[in-house]
Figure 1 (cartoon, rainbow, N blue to C red):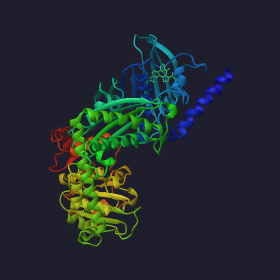
Figure 2 (figure 1 turned 60 degrees about the horizontal axis):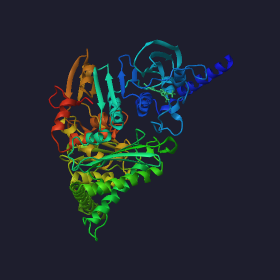
Figure 3 (figure 1 turned 135 degrees about the horizontal axis):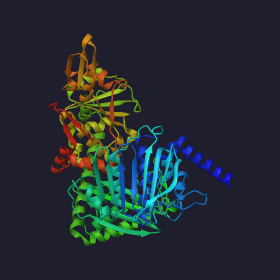
Figure 4 (figure 1 turned 30 degrees about the vertical axis):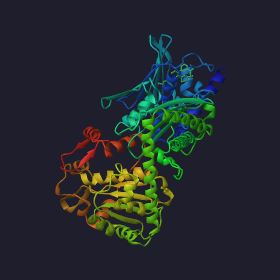
Length: 637
Ligand code: 1YM
């Protein structure tokens, strides 16, 4: 038997070695995202356990030594002898794809890249300890150097509790960063608490002495209320469930007086960020239900056209959660964030249609509110289309000419290389025009404040000259008609002064892009330029540009500073300086605007840019630090 055991051991090491050779194959990447994948892997096992009806609490702790632990109060990982002669827990943590959760017929918690197992986490950790409380006893086993057993399973005491605790230290050699993010973990755990009603999740950060606890008795209904917290709802949350062909559907939805739609969907508790068949089914049922109701009750007359999807989704917040058996799961797309399962469309469509029809009949006031909103949406859309078509037809007319007057275009037409600088003010625009590399850099100076598109309809946006110019310059349409393939630029770069006004313009512009050209952000093509704050001159006339207050402290330490020039605005730099410090690709720093968490982004935008003042005040007080410098602010997050 000895040889067999050895063969087995070699196989295991080969398995874990394969993970270490090509970590990307197992966790997607070895950056921050991949690092957090380790956390989700372990947490998913706890969530599985809660979903199966065992335990109700999960606690995640970020420890001072850089390790992270996950604890649950489920049954405890099995510790009995496995057929290989080893303990079951050793097998779970050292053999790829071990564990009962891959059997067919189960609801596997995770989709896509997830669910590759705890052994992958072990393979990518320099240390791991697993503690299981089961049958009145407490057991422990530990591993080191990517999954090698450090100490065999031992009984360490008696207990009247049950549960599992896993603590691991990610291997520094395997990741570009091994620092866990409290906010990333909190966001994801809050989401899990919404999706699994009754679950309590606690996140504790021992490094910065902070903690957060999530528990929602009303599940995804609370999720919708949370997203809409800072908006003004126009109906009560509609919440329904149903199941067919083994697929369970749960949906919560509510309309607000805003103009945006915010639909988040999940399959087996994992976010389907790119939508898929379930969202298609939901949307088509929504359109049909509202058209039927509006026709039947004469909101839409015989001569009127039907509502389009966008009309009945204006101001809608919806959370869609599906449970699909493993055997029916299909994911698509590069990041596997899109549900493919065809039958999910029909199931969601039928359940949604039935429930919305019933709701509209039973809640006349809400129905009228929503239909009126959709009618307004429809009219605005028609008006906006008209305006756009007019503008398209008018090539060469005065309007078009005005636009090209403002823009200093690049001399080459290469949308895979060209850059558009949106610059605050005419004077900075002038320096930028002379300082740029005109072959591929275009300059668009903006005068005055940009419209706050969070508070405006699409129609108003079209009427605004600055917004209009932006839309035509970028050349890829707007809103639902936006087509990233037609975008004239590889990079769109916002360049403003480093003061309060500049920050404000940045936020207004980002809000606009977020609302009307979201794919530009999703594809990582929106940037913020970083102009210097200071120019330091040392003795011997040596000078350098400095980009932040911290950097200033750093570089002036122990040096003889002869002159310190504070740049109050871009306009104070001449063309050459602007090129040198902010525009030259070989020297500049650009901040890429990204959208990692759609729900969070949606909330931030509505808090910071929406109608309600109080939540904005609270957020600013909690998150913005005003530095001693009179007019400069640093955002902590
Ligand atoms: C902090 C991480 O892994 N909890 C956990 C895992 C398991 C069980 C309970 C469990 C499952 C079963 C029976 C079962 C796992 N078991 C397995 C395997 N928390 C954490 N809690 N008894 C306990 O599914 O039948 C894999 S994970 F393989 F044994 F099924």
